Length: 349
Length: 248
Ligand SMILES: Nc1ncnc2c1ncn2[C@@H]1O[C@H](COP(=O)(O)OP(=O)(O)OP(=O)(O)O)[C@@H](O)[C@H]1O
Ligand SMILES: [Mg+2]
Picture (cartoon, rainbow over the protein chains, first blue to last red):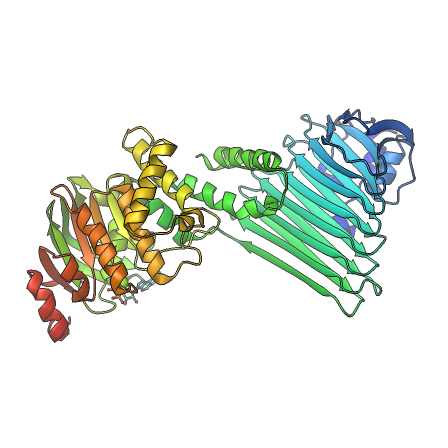
């Protein structure tokens, strides 16, 4: 397929789900990766297999596009009952179309760490189909940091069976245009999911965190907290939807998006949505967009802390709660370290 | 040490004139008290001295140890040794008290060209001062002032003051909200900092605090300036007679 034909297939702002993230407009036909297949690198612990094989058809716009380049996907299998001691690492997702199928089999536990770091002037489209079998547990840690002329769309569709646990933590530093989309489909009762994310955007970077959570069975527990900071002319998009079907009684679900807007030219677009058909549920959503507290900043400066450092401390404290519940202390420290580096560089500490 | 001359200041969007030619001289080694009616501009004076946004000086000068304060950023004034114990201390969510103070102390040290204080020395100092002020160690791990009671916040101001060891201290109603025991603890802390190199300005409504910290001078702030001054006994008289005769 010619790059120009690929661009014709990209989603654009006249499509409701893409109204704030116009991929078609962002991509020029000279970028690399538009019509090639991705070559990711895996590090998998013993007992976890990574193979290439026939892929299932996709029903998502970006998934279908990836499918037109390859009917194969990378298949990662965590066998029944396995508890992988080390995380599965996925790296080098730096350009092209990549398809992944992950199966965490019954009672298995796994941690995936994904680094989405691209090269200048490229395009990446990643489609992941994840299946959590009965009682499986998956922790996903996703770090994304692209150059300011790179476009990345990563879409994860997660099918979760009864009694599964999902913890997902995203840290996004954006790119020319970045969309990290998670679609969670509950296929059984008693699912527990944490879907947190933080974005830190400067310059003219753009991150879109979109999620769709669909529950059809009782007693599920969902916590989602996305927090971010935008400076300069950066743009953040948060779209979150909880769709709670009639049989999903006793759903306990909470969605929050909180943004700090540190420049008048920055932009934050948020659309939290609840669509609820069950009558005995506790579902809530909240959305705030604010600035740093001037009084607190003055108080800190009165104690001798420079304005830049005061801003950095308050921002770090604001974002930290997103990763508070992570069990892996070292990983949490590493994510907070990356946040500190960004704050140091962006605020000029 | 602190020399305020003919200070005029306006506040807020409306630019209301609050200070209208205030002059005051606090030499090193002295403790001065400022009393005065509600809304007279006592807190305004403390914010003008420390450089808060929204408090604009329209005339006059302020020098601390020979340096022009009004030209400096708030953090540089702090590094120059100026400390304000806030009438209403701010809550700093998510920043543990110890992290906050260590950052502040070392920022000041760097600004003065001194070496940073190492963690063990800092901890030792913090523990000693906390126990002197009867502050429970677990309080120092909590985010600064978040959920602290009014009295605890005031005590925490004194804790910060003793940790930072400023050369000039402004205390804005630090006594309000303190129980008798806390008042004594705070006063002992303040008295321990009295020294020939250090000056203090204590804003208060009550003689009570001045029973513990004997001031060298007492001033009345009314009508935007110092309307009257006297010695330590003057505070007692003011408490009895009120400020009616100093009204602008
Ligand atoms: N941001 C502002 N905009 C307008 N007016 C203000 C602002 N801040 C303070 N003022 C006014 O300035 C005057 C002085 O206030 P200030 O807080 O300095 O008084 P104070 O002497 O400390 O009083 P108190 O004894 O009650 O603490 C008051 O009339 C107050 O309403
Ligand atoms: Mg006041």
